[in-house]
Amino acid sequence: MLMSRTIDLSTHGAFVRTNRPLPMGASVTVSFNRGSDRNPLMLDAEVVRAGTADGGRQRGIALRFSDLSDLDEMLLSELIKRTRS
Image (tube, rainbow, N blue to C red; front, side, top):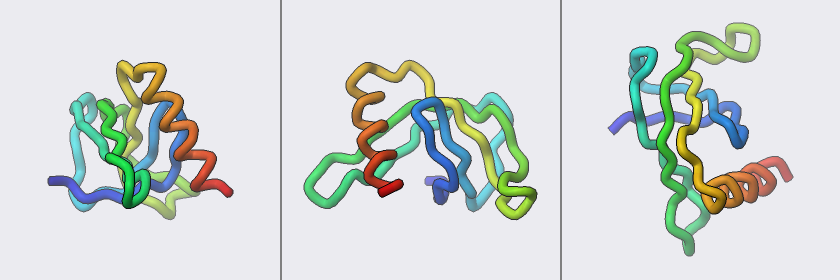
C-alpha cells in the first residue's frame, strides 16, 4: 500500500505527497475517506507528472482521474466542498 497525503484536489485529479515515487503512466486506485459513517470514495487514476508543487515546497505526484461516473464526480465535488469550507 502506498501512503500519501492529498495536497491539491479537483474533479479532474490531485497532487499528492507519497512515501515512494511512482512512474509516469502508472495506474493507481485512490481512496478518499468521506467520514466515519460512509464508505470511502475509490477512484482510478493515472500518474501524469512527478515533481514539485507550491513553488517547489511539496514533492509528489500528479494524478488524473479516469473514467469517473456521474455519481463519482458528484461525490468528489461534495468532498471538495466540505474540505474547503
